[in-house]
Image 1: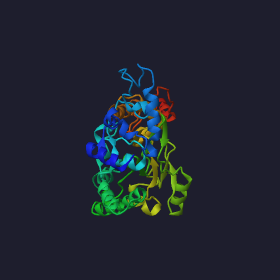
Image 2 (image 1 turned 120 degrees about the vertical axis):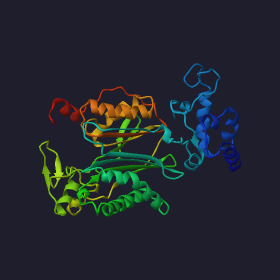
Image 3 (image 1 turned 90 degrees about the vertical axis):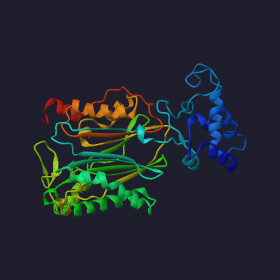
Image 4 (image 1 turned 90 degrees about the horizontal axis):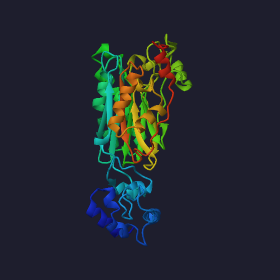
Length: 379
């Protein structure tokens, strides 16, 4: 595509254009002209083949001879109609949909606990970065409250000077932990408070970076399969156990067979829990960076252990894929966790991507943890 064409398209469409506008018949000669940029040659061929399909197909519902939705390119189901981000699409050479916060699904239920110590946050961090986070507090809600309120502000400060989002998340977690220690200094009774933190940053609608401490999780649904983006920080992990022991801590098992650091904490990394910091419990997150493929990636799900303990990742993926929109999906997952026997707070965030609705799955999935709970094994 020539520079002049791109300028004219940008002027007419603003920072983003709708699917129908970008490939309106009037623009087809402009986008798929003979001297088009090589990155668009494939699109031209696909468009030509789509136009030759027989009428009365899903690609030509109105018998017009022209494809009616982006699904003709194998990209999007049209349940969620979002505009295309033009500058990132040009930069990366592929169509990138806008992820609207209004479409994100969130739910948090108290379960059988006296109070809900889970917290979550969804926001537009910068013009190009979206922020999603879940926090599962323990020993009180002070640590989760602090992270919900301040963690994204620390990210904003670091993003201004650092382009590497994995490094940004690492610095943020460590600095938030220090700030929380100062905040709780005059509240001795709250020094045992701590929280998990699982944070996802989405830049330009395509670069996904996740950082996590504790046992809250992030999972990506790709081609209908659950792709784990985090690994729980528990004493069962050999590397985590060795760090605890080298720092002078010890591991014990409770009546349910669950390992705990110094008989108190079920995780080896967290924000807060300052009485165990000298015992090897750290606030440094493990991070992961992944580039999205909107033709295959349906959604991102962030969950706390009230969901994770009772439903495995593929089961969560299957249930969400059966839902019409992310808000319904979030509510259904949190409700089912309670129905299956979870007594903990249950929180989930569902962020839709390009392939939302494309990979429906009704296959049954078996959860060992739910089986134990239902049988009374863990009661």
